[in-house]
Structure formats: structure tokens, C-alpha cells
Length: 233
View 1 (tube, rainbow, N blue to C red):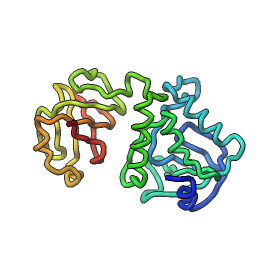
View 2 (tube, rainbow, N blue to C red):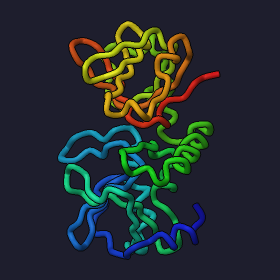
View 3 (tube, rainbow, N blue to C red):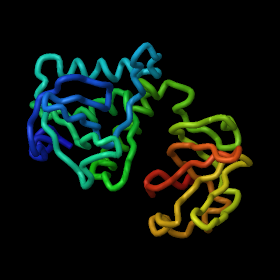
């Protein structure tokens, strides 16, 4: 999106009080803003170590706001998250999108938490460009595409996984695409309509991205967004 297009989207202007980390701002009016559509590495607080590139993401936002802490906000369909933070896209007075800037620098991952998917296509394109050039966090081993069969049985968190679908299974609440002995893609039945012809994926190679959780010694990668699953030719 161009700078002028970004500025046209702005619904209100405000002042930043504190930069909490790369994707969270504290405003002068005491609201906490969680930037929509991206996730940056965690910045260590109270003596805790930062995740790799967490400090760089914080510094990038600090530099953007160093001379002018005025920002414009625009919103998506859902305005609050479970932590009562305001969900918003954040724009500088010159039309720079903070989200887009961090993605271009390889300091953020494009994520989508439904129903807020307004800029998903744009953000995925910027992420792919940064990944291809090896910028920022895309240098890290844990941010690469892992073959499901070679993924550590202890792996957790947001991961990028590829592999052949070995089997399709169902339970009362979930549908599963098995990618390895330990890892399955988990889709809630309430989301089934978004994923057509899941059974037809058996035997095909796919790429999936999302948060991996462990349950009874097994790993499940929870999938809610169709764009987080791609067929590999």
C-alpha cells in the first residue's frame, strides 16, 4: 500500500508514550496498541533475555518514532484482543506503515488472527521478499521451512513446516492431517468450511505455518486460516 493510501485509511491520530516492543505500543491516553498482522520477537523485560532480533525490532520502531511520536491508527473487524489491548494498524505522518516497515526489514513475521485479515496478502508478499533476501530473523535456523519428519519432537511455538500428508483422521472436535509420526495439522470442525477437500490432500506435499502445541506426547500445528496452508508442486 502506498503512503497516500495508508494515510487515507487513518481514523484517528494519537501520541506514543512508550514502545513496549516491536509490535506493542503504549499511548499517551494509556491505551496499549497491538499491531495487527505481524509478530515480532519478544523483547526481554525484568532481566529476561530477549529473543533473537527482539531488540532490533524495538530499536527499529524507536528510530521511526525518535523525532515525532505522532501516529495514525486504523482498525479491522475486531478492536480488542483477550488482553484488552487495542488492535490497530499504525501509520506515521509521512504515510509509513510500521507493520510494513518491520516486515521489509525481516524483523517481523506475517500472522493472521481472525477476523482481522485486511492486509494479509500485502504482508505475506513483504515477508516472502524479506525471507528470500535473508534479512533479519530469516537468518535463524528455527525460522526456516522444516521437513516434518526432521522436526524435533520438542519443537514448540510458531513454525514453518513442509511435508507429505500421510493420513487424514477425524475426532469429535478436530480434523487432522498427519505429516509425521509425531506431528499433525489440527483443524477445528468449526473451521472446516474454510478447508475444502482435506481428504484429497493425502499423498500430496504441503507447506503449513502456525503455532505448534504438545498434547499427550504428540505435536499439533493448529490451523485456522486457509492462507497458512499451501500445496507444493
